[in-house]
Image (cartoon, rainbow, N blue to C red; front, side, top):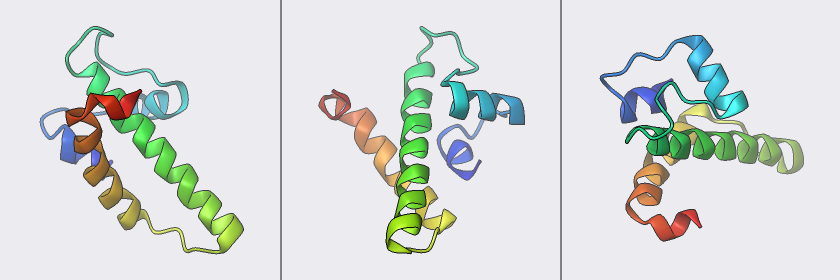
Length: 88
């Protein structure tokens, strides 16, 4: 939720919208909306770092640190959105 608030401070997401976004990659905006692509980047980056952290915990016993995940997501998303070649 903190990453959503950081990137979308004026939009209120419901729990159902967050779950649909994370589990089904469905966004609460029209698919051609200017907000849809950045939200999909945010969602996929969030999924990546959640799973990355999970496997780090499972395989290497690295502690699962939610604040670190959020900080990393908030750092990576603007990079991905300003450099479209990183999305290929």
